[in-house]
Length: 351
Image (cartoon, rainbow, N blue to C red; front, top):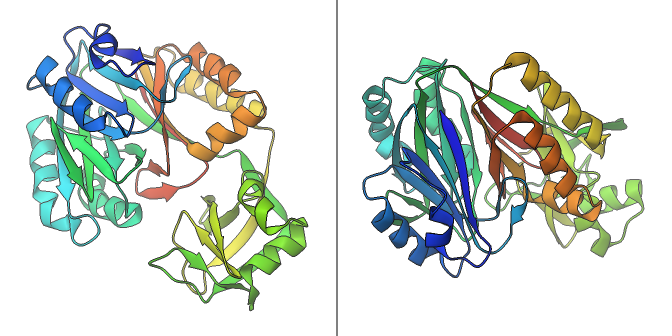
């Protein structure tokens, strides 16, 4: 298979589309002002080609911050695109669409990946989708776009998840997740006074959550939102740690990008040697896939900000380019199989 990245920093879709030749599946990352226009134009340029889209930044060897980016797969893939609607209420109502699409492209866990763009309610969406994907061992990579909108096959949807199933005709697929954080000290907290709907943590070990975070890290209210780049919370999930980013301060509570429940056990994380961790990820992918057709990744917005603040983002993309054709988008939350994670990188590698 072949992966192609088309870009236009000026937001001219036809300019980005010039790079695409006979695409069999297209992902579009647009800006909020032009999203609706771009969805319509893309369908007119490539009628009938399965496509999904969202609002967000994209990248290959450099980042497209406010234009439009297109990632196309061709030369050896079967693909289909569709949508599950009403994800805040009952996404399972539309699950038969996913079941039919899996049969349509003869998907299996070894050669097929599900790529999704979500408008919100990610944890529920992933649980629903995994009900079907897990039966065949099909992996998933994706993320949340901006402004609560996604597109599929030339139509725009609110409160939905757009997905593409991509069957690699010439080899395997495998998903990866990169975590650049590790546990800080022996801090362990029991969450309470949580609000699941608003992703709020009211208290940690019975004390106001904001005060606990501030006392450990010696930061002001204003510094909390940048300190989370270095010190997010983590929830232990077996041998893995799910990163929980702080979104904002609400009184003495902390609003997060991921749901926390009463009695959840949390730890405090700290930033590791992210450059070396990236090199380790690249080495592992090369070991697993000596021959690679493409790598599609989703990087968290907070990783993008962290790397940019440390003047590493451009070097990071150059490092990842050592894998061959690498492209992706900057998400507001990352999806890895059945998990909704924060401040991470997830990717799928095609043989």
